[in-house]
Image (cartoon, rainbow, N blue to C red; front, side, top):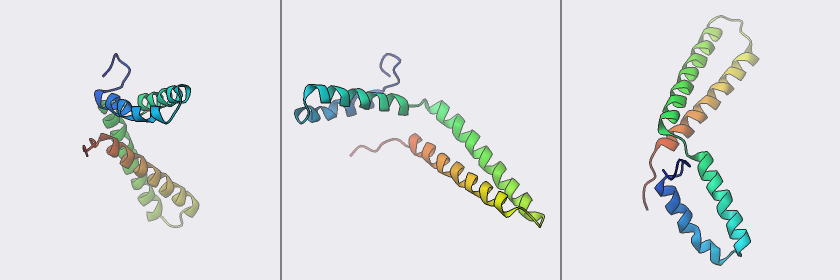
Length: 110
């Protein structure tokens, strides 16, 4: 990590690897491009511990929604609209879980 900014050495190497863009952009455009890129990196770099914590919360909520759907469907007649909304929420949770797991997977060097 660099000076508490949340940017690790790998991110810095990626940013420096983009220096070839400077030949195609003038100084003002390149500077703005780098500033935007650094902000994106800062926002996207999370502590692994925070990711694991959030992942655990989402998995727990996913299980709870699944159980609630099963309970609701076990007692007919049930509100189909409510079940559809709950299933949609469950899919959203599943997507968020997959995204966090992807963030935890280390990059494979080419």
